[in-house]
Length: 99
Image 1: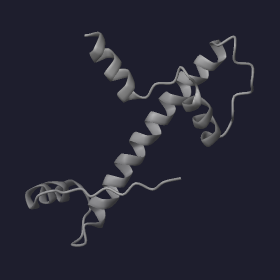
Image 2 (image 1 turned 45 degrees about the horizontal axis):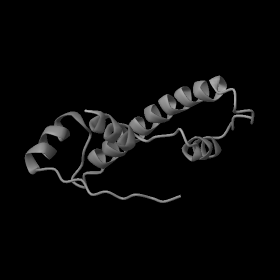
Image 3 (image 1 turned 45 degrees about the vertical axis):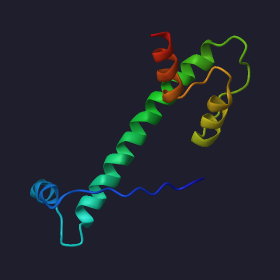
């Protein structure tokens, strides 16, 4: 699995605003942890929607007769390999093309 590293830039004023609500020392560890937790939360919510949407689609697909994987990695591999799978960019591009 690939690890994606991103750099986030905030101004000194933004740091002060965040430090008003977040426990943050001079090393900015508090802000760094909050950013990671926010990203983790988004990933978890996306996973829940993905799993719910595709479990239903697989169950409704009469041509799909294989077992539905119980682990996350296999489930994602199964779904993203399907010909009817479209990621957000593809769905948005197709919607824009239809006008």
